[in-house]
Length: 374
Ligand code: F6P
Image (cartoon, rainbow, N blue to C red; front, top):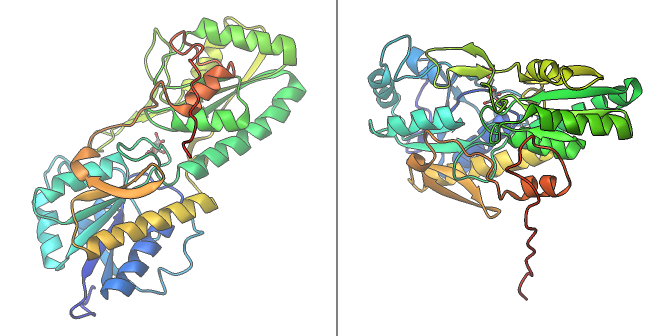
């Protein structure tokens, strides 16, 4: 039961939507504390993402409840990546959501989410809800922002996994395939692969030619007697399709990817005479404690979002650009995916070091250098 405890203060709801990621609690904490201290706000936690709005499950978050949670993985208010108010079990529940928002007497809703949740948030602004978005996702694929929180932790988990797979791969003289998450973008695979020292990194942005990958594996087996191949879950062979693990029809993101690691193992075995093992890192990349970077980043994003609310600047999402926080209209973030561009610094670095991407499209970049003016 929610009671209006702070007369004259703002009444602000917060929800975490989509797949969870490390740093959500740090963001909730900073949104809540900043608004409590600067705007005498009452903070209403919506349980389990937009599902809580549909099912009317909310609770007031106390200062104590929001304290010391920055190190916790997951989200203290729960999340859900299936409940879309515009298409929930075949029905449009968006008007009910707006009605409940009004009944709660909310001044604003802070949506901590990825592409799916911020797109829903954008649609809800058209019904008159005041929304501020905070970009989260391990996938790092949100438009307009150079970084989302959760990504750094996911990359560190991939890196540690590759470090471990390297020693067992070396000992057994095997090709070790590592399948990462990331949906249709290759950010986790690229950064994890670089940090872990992969020989080949296969990303959705560039479908791979299996013969090129096999050639590099064969060379590495000859020279070093083992090879590490990182493959993003959204990667696909040039002559094949992406691997869909499951389709959830009423979800904002219906296709759940997975399985390319095992498929790649079979494809490679036709060309390479070596033992191959595939490891899918799956949800280990999302669980557990955030890195200190993600804690600080999520805290900064949450606090900035709170200041937007306090300043009555709504219907926008916080972004990182050029190492500065700013905000853009939600419309610019909604229903879009940020892929790795060919001129991405880390991608170019990888190509220039001879890491194989299984494609001819990314060979020998022109390495330009810039002199920082005085
Ligand atoms: O968007 C985050 C993410 O972990 C993706 O990398 C992955 O494709 C998807 O969510 C997995 O979703 P689920 O938790 O429903 O299996």
